[in-house]
Amino acid sequence: MIVLGQELSYKDIASIVLDAERVSIDKSVEQRVDECYKFLETFSKKKVIYGINTGFGPMAQYRVEDEQLKALQYNIIRSHACGAGEPLAGIYVRAAMLARLSNFLKGKSGVNSELCNLLVAFLNNDIYPLIPEHGGVGASGDLVQMAHIGLTLIGEGEVFYNGELRETKEVFKECGLIPLNIYIREGLAIANGTSVMAGIAAVNIHYSQQLIKWATLASAIMNEIASSYDDFVSEPLMESRPHNGQLFIAAQMRKIFSTSSRLKKRESDLYNGSNNKKVFDGKVQGYYSLRCVPQILGPVYDTLLNAKDVVEREFNSVCDNPVVDPDTQNIYHGGNFHGDYISFEMDKLKIAITKLTMLTERQLNYLFHDKINGILPPFVNLGVLGLNYGLQAAQFTATSTTAESQTLSNPVYVHSIPNNNDNQDIVSMGTNSALMAAKVIENGYQVMAIHYMALLQAIDYLGIERELSHESREAYFAIREFFPKFTDDTPKYKEIKTIVKFLKESSLSEQSNNQKNI
Image (cartoon, rainbow, N blue to C red):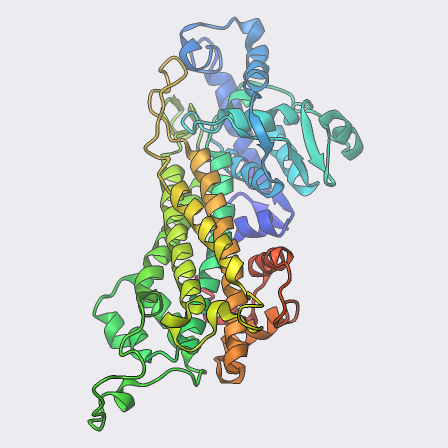
């Protein structure tokens, strides 16, 4: 169990969201939350404070009478629970609830600790509110999506429980939970913030980390198959252009190559003074998709690390408005709910993952194009050429999927549309950006799955599995356990799906050790 209250590391976030680690709240932190609530309760009397005794958004010019203040908080939840589209996956909802809970535990939102404890109960009982994917513009936070969470916290709406969509009130009764009581500003505090986009972004970071590991290993296997010269990842070459990501990816590839017998030495082949050939049998330099891997995946790695830092910081921030500060005995109005940080990082991440996917697709094309690689049959077809087709059609899937990601990589961050009577005159579209990044990442896994199919077929055709590095062999044998070598033509859609699942969930021991810092 993870005790919440201090800074949440990304490792903590991943454990709670992905591994369903249970949580509790540190008692001193719960006390801090209640002290903030009590300060707000006292401070707000006979004062005009946005969202407590005024309307919301452009309705803030209208004062709300004291006897209607609780109704005001219920109204923002009920009126804004108007999303549309498919429900968000449970993993995203879990991450969003954790993000909101973490924000509240900073003790600057003015909510009663009852709200925090109910969110803990939702997390620990695997109760996931129904949140439609469409609705947020990411500027006053994820108002619509978060309102759907709020709707269930007050005992209304629907939740997913044990894999079934059910009425919230039924699940509350079954789990012995009591609907949230509104005190002063719980309604606005629930709805107003970046928690949904931050939650989706946190999940995107995890799957991007895993994907870049597989891309690095696939690139190493590609160069093993091609018997490349090893100096393209050499330390002197990398240190002459010392970008962090480039240095890191090259270092990972050198570690992999250290146990391989497939790489060639330029010193012995071309520098020894005895080579008098006019035309060389092998390529003096490999294609860019093989030779420039550190320079291509390096920026992807750097982008991922920066996005990870931003997401972790967002989970540990106060992301609503106004901010209630007992320390300075004041309440501050501003825009901490604005989702530009997440939106921008998710746009950058999806561009990076699309470039990774493009590299994968080009490596795949190298394997399939016999006139380019010069050592493999067309489409790594191990059957009868002309009668059988190998992975010829799988390239269509990889190409079309890559093309979709290229289109989705157009930035959302700069696509603001004013709304809300122009109160929200510039917005982030952060949740859209995070969801589109998620789609691009999923596409990347699909292309990568086809790529590993081709890599294994190529290894079998050449009969080199015993010459590969330890990491490459481990991946080869692990995937071959459920995806055997094939010569006859059979449908491959189920195998693609199975390999995608493997790539997402597997942590090959040696690969994990060598790339633990990704």
